[in-house]
Image 1: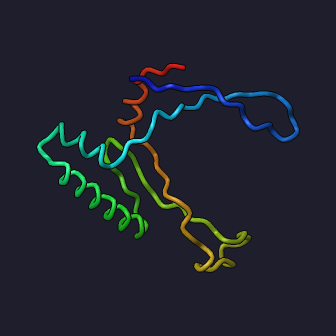
Image 2: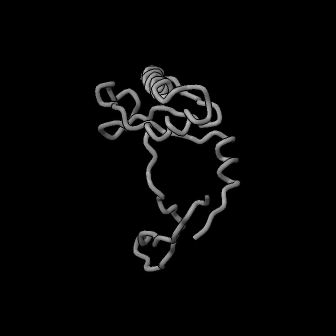
Length: 125
């Protein structure tokens, strides 16, 4: 298999009419937890139910550790951490209260092994 891409026009920069393009992956579909569990089951001694149980427990434990301010590293997969957002502009750190800071998202950074594997993939238009 290979990664398919196409070119998409960049939004115009402020006040310029220069056309610029960037490469973007053309999505080849979506993989569900059920499909992953079935594929993993074929490669090991775990049943589909076992794999799904592990994935559910992993999600619960990740949420618990991220919710306590920890970063989570899954070897060969990547790093996860919580990002925060202030509801209003912060001019001095002492002026903002914790009620005005909220969860924004979870960021993900791929592990070097995963990046190495993906660099070896064939890419085609």
